[in-house]
Length: 440
Image: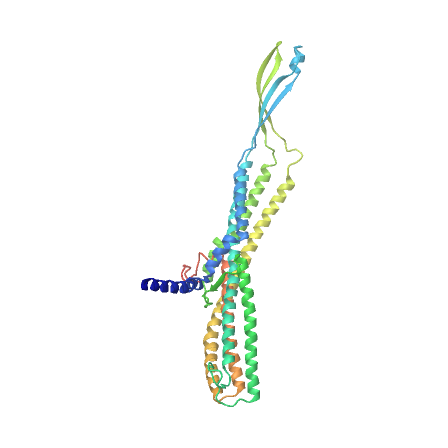
């Protein structure tokens, strides 16, 4: 009997603790960590842009396969009453069977060359769409990172504003109690600081919700998905500019697209020239006729060769040459724009990184020290309210500006990678010698 009571007690205890035990893992796993690489990998799986580019590649593969196909032959049956009239037997008979085959003279090779160039351009466009998607995901991801740390800063600012007040004995959680008399003007100044901090929190919460919603929608995540990101840390300058320019010239998808389109256009000139002469046709026939008073079969071959007398397709050739000339200049434009953009991005990123380092050491750290000394001095009456307000604003404004510099440097990093044609998922970071290492 005692054993059954003890067992019952254990069972009741487990029944009470079971919901708590079940909730613990769910709480721990409720917010999933999303890195930039993970976000990009997920976006590629659900992006309609990538699927459209993949469908285009498949279409070009079919076009390449079709470009080498010979034209189909044709067969002709001729039934008439000629023999019946000639030998007075009457009726209709099958008098001729003919098979005709068009013969291509070099046209297929030009078609294949043009189709192959189109396929290569489509494959590079698939890569380029991934580059564009990575760039857009990076912008959304870093904006969410900034929103998270800005909201954290806003709450910290509000916590300070609420705690920095005169202790009246009712609040035991005040961190910076004021032990001197506050004038009405000083109290109003502190009230303004608190209200400003509250408005900052409200604005930061709005920015956070907007950034989070945009991030989820672009990755097709449900609204119930809990997301947290890694911290917004300082960016690093990738490889030297010459190394990036050489990589860009050799491997950038946009440049390769323009090159393959130029190849396709040049092949189009040769194709139009070959099409000036329509395909000759070879016909093999077997015919039945009345010869020497009796019906007999005979076999023959005929060749039909079109003569380009009136239509030599001069206009089509001129058009093809002009389009090829256009693709040549389009390639030069793409190379010029990408080289210019890469140089600007590299220079701007270096300035942002240096500015962030300088801002942290020369402004943020001293502002924090001044703020700590000022709020301690104000609590005991050594400094006035204006000094506190100035130190408070300088410290929190400098922190906010430092976060913005980090955010801008990561956006510039994303733009630099797009200009250089480097994938974020595959190429993490570049040292001065161009080798891969480190992590973004």
